[in-house]
Length: 100
Image 1 (cartoon, rainbow, N blue to C red):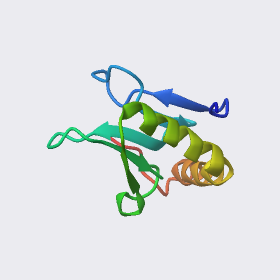
Image 2: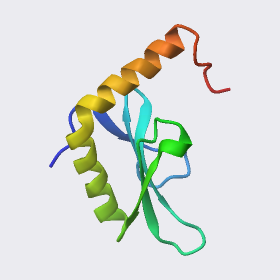
Image 3: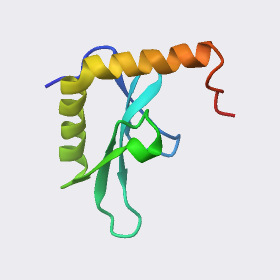
Image 4: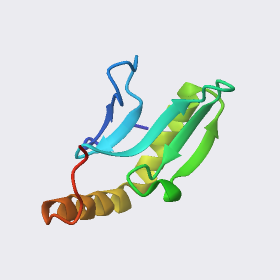
C-alpha cells in the first residue's frame, strides 16, 4: 500500500540516512527509531500528541516497521488530518508556542 499523497516521509535530522518520520503538513504523526541499548527497532505512533499518548510498537526490523507505519497512517488518516488541523489552528491562535 502507498501513503496518501499528503502524508510524506521526512528525516528527523540531517544525520538520518533515510527518512524516518511520516508527516502531514510538517507535523510528525509517526516515527521509527532504533534503540541504542539493544539495537531493536520501534515505531512511535500518534507522535504528534503529548509523549504520554504515544503508542510504541516493537518492530521485527526497519522495513517491516516502516510498512506497518504506512498501514497505520492509511487506516487512521482521517483522524490524523483532523488532529493535525486542530494543532495548526491552536498554533495560529497563539495557544501553542512554536518550538524554539
